[in-house]
Image (cartoon, rainbow, N blue to C red; front, side, top):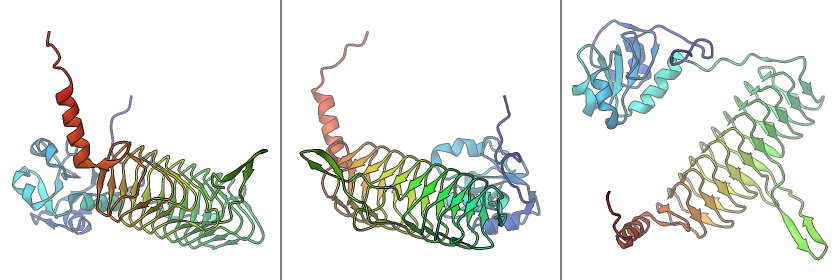
Length: 344
């Protein structure tokens, strides 16, 4: 119904045009030409025109580079000889990072519009920095602290005593309680942070809820995806280290501790009191039992079921999770055991 577009003006703020030199500087790269062309935006290799910038990071798409009409393309030095003569190469050893910076140059995040919407509800004991933006129908409860440059989306709830560091972004209809956030934390729409964990005692009369008396602590530059849930600690705290990224629909149980710069992909579930050291990566739909230790830099594949501790740097697949070499060896063995299928 509508033509494909990158950064459509209906939805995305745009800056520019920018000179080739400015774009190359933003990419932390070097332009292979002194051309004075002006560039107006970004686009994929297949659709970019002479006034747009594109990039190539994955060699599997090198054929698209051969036919691109882009005015400039961000590439690794190894791919520079393949850039068409009509296109200026912007050379950097990190093309994807360069693309991220250039895309942000042309499409900067809209600035915070400081002020409190008339329909927002802010308790008299809450502290809201004058530079913060509070959207329609959001709620800020007693004793909460909203730092400089924060943006609170429509219908979001910031619970009693919650603290937001500077430049945080809280998406529409997110809810936060019993939480302390560092600087530049992004919480996407619908996320739930700080609710009671799944804790109860079994008695002869039924289940007895155990009070959850901890907090959630999010370090600087953490991102929490849409509809992700992070339970507060039961006695200690649930902690997410600086720079960690949680995808949409992730479940973090009470007392979980996640280190710095971890990546947790969609639909992962981490049971209570499990610890992930720094730089761990977890694929989609993986699950972890409680009270485990996942070592620094470990990689856990999609849909893996982790039931034991994992050593630092290990690569794990399958359910129950096992070292990737063992997993693929078993798959190969099973294929050999299967009878050959007749080909009609």
